[in-house]
Image (cartoon, rainbow, N blue to C red; front, side, top):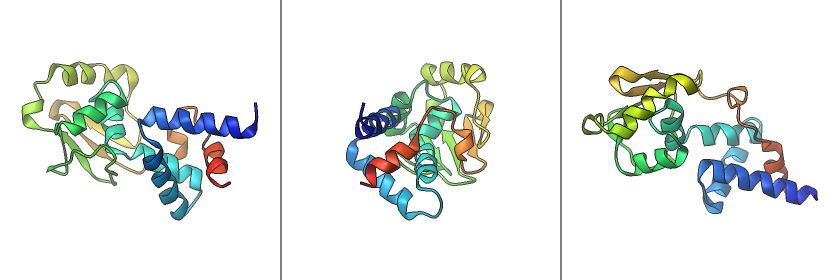
Amino acid sequence: MSDYAVQLREKQKVKHMYGMLEGQFRNFFVNAEQARGVTGDNLIMMLERRLDNVVYRLGFAGSRNQARQLVRHNHFLVNNRKVNIPSYQVAVDDVISLKEKSRKNEVIIDNLEGVARRGVPAWLELDAPNFQGTVKSLPGREEVTMPIQEQLIVELYSK
């Protein structure tokens, strides 16, 4: 298989994993390229900081697709403000909380009960009894355990 095909497959895998279309993914790449540091690491960090991904990582949703839908349907607050944009970038010390009327949602309650098996990344802190989570720090590349070869994506877009 050619290098181009391998790079393209990796990009498609990551886009699918985070539920993004090409244009949005390209914008993330451009922003990652313009930021200080290693482009691939910046890209992964920006993808991990998406609100839908954080909702998934905290355990409120069983998948990123489900998290995206929950965010779109106004179930979450960020720092006590309504945010229904899945691509919203969370920052350090942001508090993501479930709206009061959504706290009886059976799907979300079941997902939170299953979070003990999956765990929460070190850069996030879950306060399950209060239905909220906090971003303690920015995610580092070493904290993302998914098999992503971001260098292939950087090479693909650098052509």
